[in-house]
Length: 217
Ligand SMILES: C[S@@+](CC[C@H](N)C(=O)[O-])C[C@H]1O[C@@H](n2cnc3c(N)ncnc32)[C@H](O)[C@@H]1O
Image 1: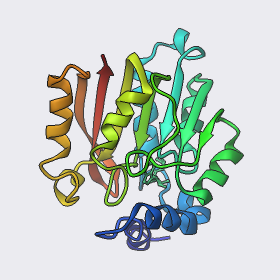
Image 2 (image 1 turned 180 degrees about the vertical axis):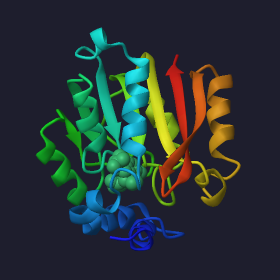
Image 3 (image 1 turned 90 degrees about the vertical axis):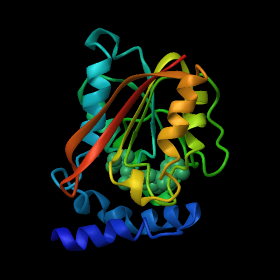
Image 4 (image 1 turned 135 degrees about the horizontal axis):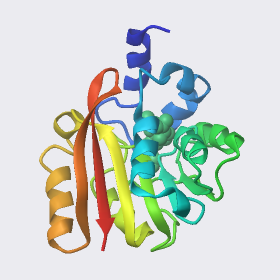
């Protein structure tokens, strides 16, 4: 598959004004071809996310820490985390088609077929040492208020790691002039503190990505 066809397939899940339910069903339609379309090289979100988790958690702690992979898709982040020695990984993913494939990986414990932010979810408070998201931010995807929910689900002292396309900060109306100010407000309110925010090259379709790493208070 060429890059242009792949780009169009991805765009179908990010059409301006798309609702959360339409996003989930677009991913279900795409699920059988998702991994082939967004193959490593063209989309490097899962590798970047797993690398960031591994950077923050020493090897000797990896069998102990509890992780939730949010917007987990077909489970690529979980598979990479398992290769790095992590064993307690749950998933939240609203699309049935993606979730069915994720379950086949066999690397996840609990699975929540639910949305983050867009609708209420049933993940308990203060549960995870690490909450990681690769590719879950975008038009109609996780809204700004989802950040509050990320903090809610993460234990005090735990990490929230968000990997997303950099240009979405400007191109997605929901995020423009809102996402970064909200993240900063939560820091001023003492809800979390910045560990690192960095720009990474070749996140997706050769475009830059952003990696946010925050520690929950
Ligand atoms: C680009 S895929 C990324 C999947 C996987 N993390 C990866 O990197 O391959 C985006 C995923 O976000 C999910 N998603 C969309 N809106 C969401 C929301 N509000 N909460 C959680 N997940 C959402 C979609 O169903 C889709 O599986």
